[in-house]
Structure formats: structure tokens, C-alpha cells
Image (cartoon, rainbow, N blue to C red; front, side):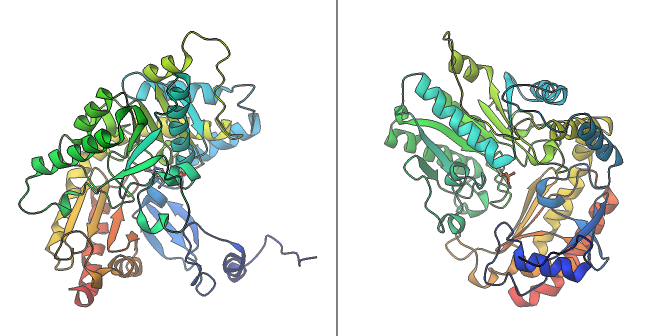
Length: 459
Ligand code: PMP
């Protein structure tokens, strides 16, 4: 029998246990057992505290998630009270008040006729559900050949098989065998890589033409869905050229291709609105996926929000139309209760308006970092930001010597009390929505100072 460990372990036991047994997402297997992991022990507002008692600004809000900040007693109370009342009910055979009420709230907050909600366990399963909805719809409509999904380079949609299959991050994809029979990728839309001779409008024309050409090449009757994040977040906060989403939606509508907007990061206030699709980018997608900010990360939950147009066609006039999709923890009552409380807090504290008010200051401080000789592009929107290093002469790949810029900047920021998220030659930021102007200044003062430390090695 294996030796038993008590739960009353001291810190070094915790770190040893982690190094020995805990395989983290996207773990570097070669370095895994050598260094102690960062262990966070508590949080308050926009700050987290680590094993050494260091107080750090949580620049990425966990993983683009903790909209309302840490230490919310009323979230704890809402969760505890639902646990005591009813911790679980099968979503197959029953409903609960939190699940029903949350579906109604989300339908109110979502754009246009997006009125039907299937709850999932997180973002990946929401994306899986959206894509399977498309498959189900086209099978129901008697067009089983209309199933190809058009996705985009640098898009991130999750880690389940189908969600990972539509993810366009080369490094991650090269390790596995994904569903490439049904998926095609459009080239990078990042305005930063646009050739100098092109205007933003021409860049947009070119990117819309990429979609049109791909549809013409494959044939519209073979394409079921186009999936796009309003802003490609894990790809490096890539903001599409003006008009891109409206025009790609028009193209999809013309060919009866479902437009799936993946708002796992942009939903629930990140850009100062409940959802970015309509209020920021002027589109009413057929399906929206969301997760993360729906509970501010206090508990895991995702949702796939489906339009009446799609639901009506899925249902038709027939009886016995079984949609065989869902999870044991779909509509988990405790997670739904947390989401309802989270929405209540965002509303009561006016956090959407707060984001709209502080975002210009956040973006101005971010843009000013382009003065650094190692930064090629500082971009963002709302409370989302990214610093990217310099590109090579062809403007399509990072400068080779800058491939560790993200990690070095991350270490330099952390030593000064700020967590950022490194992505090769980039760092991304998405702090809790409650961040004040003074805290924004504190955050960017640290980044400025950290840049002066790393610049000599990367300039
Ligand atoms: N879609 C997007 C846009 C995401 O950023 C993520 C996670 N970062 C996912 C889907 C997957 O969500 P999850 O990790 O909750 O499964």
C-alpha cells in the first residue's frame, strides 16, 4: 500500500506533492519535477498572495476569468447556501431554480434572438456543443455533407478533441492527431503583420477575401460553420481590422454557414459589455460560446447560447427529436448559483460602465510602452492588452532572439509584484474588472520598470 499523507501538510510537502503527482495543463514535462511550482494561497481584490507571502497584482485575472476580483464573501455565501439546499440534480431528468433562472438571465443579456442556453463544464465543452449543434442541424436538414468548419490561425477554442481541432496554434497542434478532415484554417488576421504598403481597409478586404476564396474552393454546400473569437485572445489579443466581423458574418449568411462567436474571454464584461459580438463589433451571431467570466472563475461553468433561428430549424415540426449531447455537470446548480451572484455583482457595482471608464487610461498606458526598443506592437481593447516583440524582416515571425521575451518579462514583472501571462515573444494582460485607475498605474509602472531590466538582452 502507498504511504498515506495527511491533509495537514506544510508548504514543502505541498510543493513536493505537486512536483511528484500533479500534471498541470500545458506542462513542460522536461522541467516539471525540477522547480517548485508557484503556489497561491489567498486573494483579495486584484491581488493574490503566494507561498512566500508576496503580494502580486493578478495581471491575467487567473486565466482571463476573475472579473469581480478575489475574496467576495457574498459569492462564498451564495455557493454555500446552494450546497446546503441542493448540491446536485441530474440535468437529464430535472431542473433547478438556479439553472432555469440563469438561462433566462443569459437570454436577456445575449444579443438578438440568442435565447436558448445549453450549460457545459467550461469553454472547451461549450465550443464542442456549438460545433455538434451545427452537425446535428445539418444532419436534421438532410445535408450531411455540409460539415466543414472554417477556423483561423492563432485562434484558441479549447482542449477537448473537437475544440482543439479548430484551434489554430501550430505548436500545440503538432503534438496530436486532430480532426483535420473537417477543419480548414484561414491565415493570420493580425494587423501588426500587415505589409506597410497596405491600409487597414485593404487588409480587411484581403482577410474577407481569404474567407470568400476558401468557401469558393471547398464549395458552400460542404461548409457548416465559421468559428471566430471577436478578439483572438490566447493568440495574442489580435484585434480584427474594422468591419471584419460584419463582413465575414454577411459572407456566412449568404452561404447558410453558421457563425459561431467564441466569447469565452470577451464575454461578461472584458470589453465593457456583457458580450462583445453585438455591442462592440455590431454582429448577431448564430451561436455564442462563453465560460470563465460567467462565474468570475469561482466555479467551473460554460454555456452555448443558440439563436431561435437555429433552434427552430433543429426542431422543425417533428416529434421525438433527441439532441444527444450534454454532461453530468451541465447546469450544475451550485455553479449556476455562483453565476447568478456574479451577474448580480457586475450589475450592482456597475462594472461594465467602470470598464468603459477606465479602459482609455489602461490602453493609453499600454500604448506608451511601444516606446521601448524591444516592443514592436502594444495593442488592446477594454481591459485586454498585449505587448508583442519585434518581427523579422518578412514581418511574419517573431525576431528569433526575442523568443524568450515573454518569459523574461514575466519574471521581471513578478519580482516587482505583478503577474503577466507570457506567450513566446508576447505578454498579455486582462486584470480583474474592478481595477482602479491607481491600480492600473501601479501595474504599468511595474511593466515599464521591468522592461528597462530586459531591454539590454533583447534590443
Ligand atoms: N475558447 C476561448 C476563446 C478560450 O480562450 C478558452 C480558454 N482559454 C477556451 C475556449 C477553452 O475554455 P476552457 O479552458 O474553459 O475549456
